[in-house]
Length: 250
Image 1 (cartoon, rainbow, N blue to C red):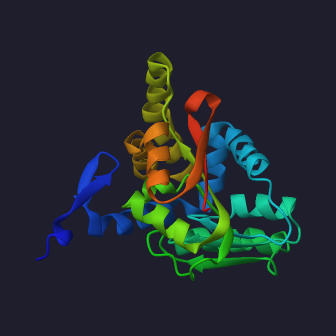
Image 2 (tube, rainbow, N blue to C red):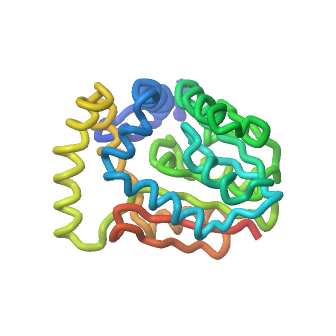
């Protein structure tokens, strides 16, 4: 057995083989796909919509651009992008077929089929050619990737020169007291919400644990720079509950 096959990583608070994590994450999102959007509203009291709107404000979509939304799930970010740039196009890439199917239903209802496509794929091995997109986004999916470095390298590869990466992800509050209060809410309330709304406590227990495992703002910004991106910046939102990171392929 090779050394790579014995490498471990985290799945929430559990230590698992790297080779097993993709299947475990896919299981989580397959389980919650039909109620994922409802749970986002419940967990954040609708604030996730403001975070994604702020992402679009900073991104400033333009007509003619081609977006790749990695781990794009049901298409929330892609829909916003296309609403602001009616002559742009977007591809949603996600490894969970159930999430993509939910997104397709929404796209059909909003009549976006000619500008929006859906591709099943892995963030660490994107099924696209080099220099294919003007913008790559990832909204609350980066922390679920087995090797974040590989996902950032792939994002850099598929971006055209002059293209932009933007990542929206849960982060760390700079105030220890606020972080303590937020952790109490996350660990004691969100799994219960998952049980009541999505009928799946375990998946939302994992999602809460995965937030605590994700690098803080400065560490993640350094990882983006290490992948080759320039002009890396981030903005805290809701006092650091989430952070919006930006980088350019120059």
